Image (cartoon, rainbow, N blue to C red; front, top):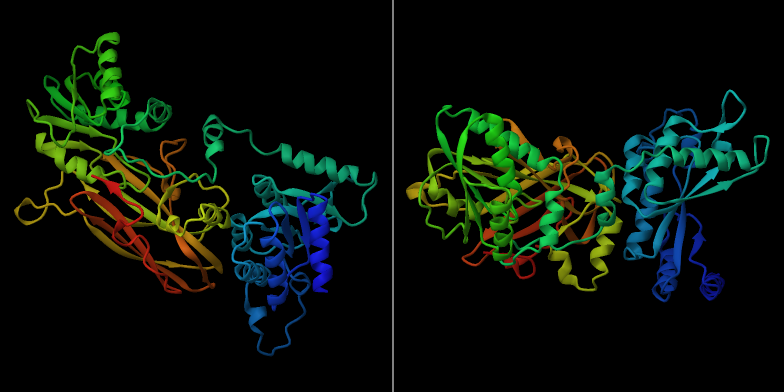
Length: 526
């Protein structure tokens, strides 16, 4: 049997077949996994698609209760056992990136949480039996609303459709194919926001080093296209100016001015609030300063002074009423906003306003075979100790994001005015559905002025904003979390005279090793 199995794969490889369809795994699948791992390790392009039904036959047609104590399998949520068989197989196969899923869509569907978990798996195909289809009033095949919604979600990952079984409606297979085309056409047209994000889906990027490196013009241009962020900043500055006396000329300092979008937003806010302002635009990037100075002339900004220096070293000629900055990273503080603003707050008047005045990072456990294998593809174990910026697409978030670190500005500091930006937190997440944790997603929410905010936290996301993608903290070894368990993660924010870095580890349901000790892999330079 082993020889025949390997011979079939060898023949498929010879024919340049892109994928081989493999039978569903059993509970005890170690020998099967061993063979799959052997053939996939020796194949460069060939992939194995393992058939996995959404439900077992017994779950689709449950027998009446006998009154006896149920087995563990029967106590599990419908569909959970099928996913666990797949998870066991891919774990033994060392999460091989050439191993994927061909889901068999069943007439009955498992609970929503069980379906959503498949959105974090490498589903390449859907096997759709003709027996699953219903008949509409005109006699044509159709699917239930739940089937439609789930299949549309899988279409987003470019999963293929394979029809199974004999036609049960007149016209052969054509009505089924036409219906599936119709279903695909119902997917919403991509918005401008989605078109911008499309090239970055599940694409890992190393976070920016804004203090060590000078950003390129193209990077600035990308950020400046955000339709939400600068509107929110404009509202915040206008609201802050509106709270000042009408005859007062307020001093606004934009620190980290870049190519000027916050300067523009602040000037528009002054016009909106009918207030006079003097504005200082402070920027350390000499190339961006050239653009700023040209804008002062071209747009006749008579009340704007451009300052080419690091905000932490600048000696301001006067104190500011309002300090405006956009130094936030995907995790809030990961681009050193606290360190920069702590150095700049010395030229803010007592009682002066910082925009933003507070920001909080958030984290959530995620399951994503795609992202984990993208890190693995670097063929460098140290990459698992690096946090990546990524627009997450093929992933499943296991629990609602919870707050991590909060920073406020101006920062009064501790006794004697000492400021300590080190942080530590332990977070517990309740897991309702069994899953494999491949890492954690990092987000942030920032309060600009009063209740005006910007956020990339899923539960409070700011509409079409795309300046920030989430941060991905990978685990070097994925951790299985059974339903009803808790995931406990620990995060540290460490600070030295030359750098800032994060360390992270998991304590429940299993203990992971410490990632990024002493910032030996990933750090942000001061």
